Length: 201
Image 1 (tube, rainbow, N blue to C red):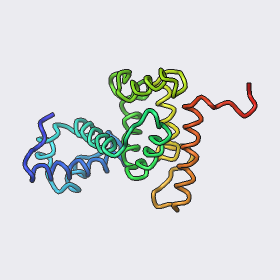
Image 2: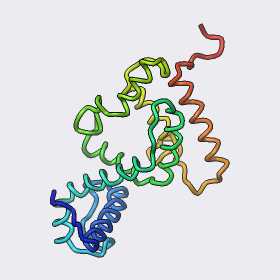
Image 3: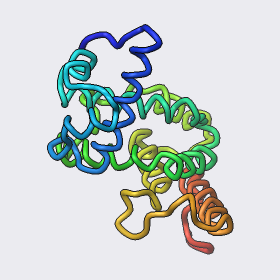
Image 4: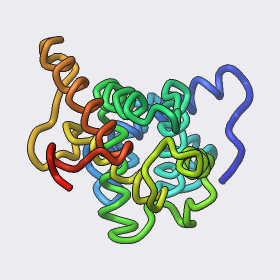
């Protein structure tokens, strides 16, 4: 993919393209997205879009990277506080609902099974941090990737990908706080290993 522009005008144009494309891809997926709609929303033209991003598929990849970077900029991961990290992720799914829709399309159209990314994330710093916390006895034993996957699933329980109920940031604050408390307590119970019913041996 060509390098993104470094001038302020070029950077502003590429930002408009990324934002317009995020909206289009989130609503319609990769196959259903139309470059014509993106350039109208971004107030640019096809030549500029292709010069910056190369192709519609490369633009989707750039949108995913941009939104993931935006998420990580505000989401502090702490292996010693997975409940807190899960709550922060829950909050961000309310602030950035299009990211979850983009990930859903990525799963549907590119990787219906296996790892969502091309390579196994076994050496991901988050998983290595979980493994260290496990070795120190602060987190239950088990495959770090599977444990992290479970925490993510719990954090996304009310996201736009939910099969049951998708929450909105416009809902009453009391509803949001109730979910945060339930999520925090549930993740704590799972990662600590204290998941046996009371009185179970």
